[in-house]
Image (cartoon, rainbow, N blue to C red; front, side, top):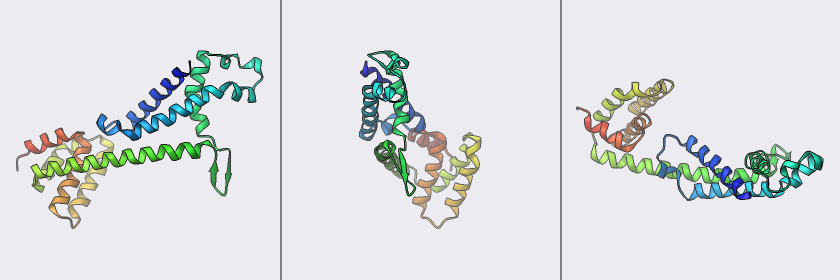
Length: 204
């Protein structure tokens, strides 16, 4: 039954990653660092399933925890969802430094998330450079951004407008401004293909 604990934990964590990077394409999310991240969670979930009877017995009387004795679905679900509480536990703190399972877990998790973010940024920068080589006209980017601005979520419009004004007022080369405006358009349209399509339709 422990395999079900691991599978449920993997599904939960993969769903969390999809929600965290919901605006990104699957190739951005599915990488070796995601596999490491999922592996870490699978390890902790499996260990929680294995030690759950001992953990429950430490806090409760044996007759109160039949649901974690043997291979039961209760044990599966408690371990699959409960291990996240355990790995975020701070046993004690020394001079504002937390000591506990969360230190190890967060170190691994942040390593994987940081490298995933780097991969996403690198791919996006490469996409913006490729689009710029096809459409190097700054005016075209300005027209498209102005046209698409009202398609952005209402709560993000003012932020995008402010970022646009900062880019245009900065002393940057046209090359850099095009890429930074392209990045803002990308936030609205979502994908490189849509960015290219929008720029291609713009009348300069």
